[in-house]
Image (cartoon, rainbow, N blue to C red; front, side, top):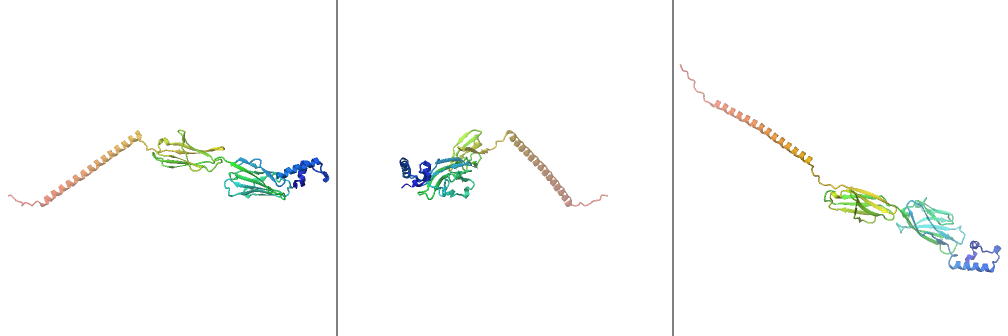
Amino acid sequence: MYPCFLNYHLISYLGVWAEGGEKMSGGMEDTFVTLLYVLERHGWCSSVKVSVRDRTLEVVEGESVTLPCSFYTMGPMSRINIIWTLVPLSDPASPSQVIVYDQGQVMEDPALRGRVGFVGAPWSADVVLNGTRVSDSGTYRCVVNNPPEPGDPGIGELSLHVLAPPTLPLCQWEGDLDLGGSVTMSCAVEGGVPVPEMRWEKVEPDSISLPLDMEGDLKGTVTIGNISAENSGLYRCSVTNPLGTRNCYIKLPVHSPAEPSPGILQGVLLTLSMALMLLALLGLVLWIHRSGRDRKWLEGEEEEERRKEMRHQPNLPRRSFV
């Protein structure tokens, strides 16, 4: 009726026993039986009992954390079995076994080898997790079984959240930087726990906060339409969570048509004047050259006409006057 009565570990712990198997005194026996009845009624003698000191733990990425799990058993611990499992926050559909203690043998998940270990097994089911990563976040379950102790195994659960500062964001822009054009600036961050808040602002020459369009939790864009020279300057994207702030920058030079300076205008006018003078001089030279060539041609024609006239002139008879 009272299985706990056979467990002398408990009797020794309470300091109530009969040396040499002698019967206890009436008062002591009544007290002990009453205590066993209470333990039995609450199930404390029928199975392993597990308790977890902290239900929720937080740790910064890279640091170590102890996952607490205490248990109470009535039987000898030569066959104690402790199993830790994980349901990852990033993939709840893929639970995994973290570490096992089985009758003195320890087996680790190969993916966690060198980062996880028991603290004081078999007397304690606590484990330490070193070099924590964001992927370690999730629900951990501690299962303790001590055959042949009757009843179900003891189970305890806790949640682990691994915090991380924002990663360095990436800033990019695309569009037309000419006057009247449109430019879109984007900022993307790979991670951070908690999810970082994003902010766009112009920092030079003036400080102006800009409206932000979020694309999911980790990317934000700013669009500037009909840009003008006033939109030129340095822009900053900031990503922030409780562990820190990271920034990236974009410098936008808006292109405006260049206005000629007086010196440049004078140079252009002087060049045009000289070109016109050269053209006029060249025209004059060509005219003189052509005029001389025409005059020579006319003189040659006249000479040819005279020669023709001389060839066709009749010979008059020569007369002699005596």
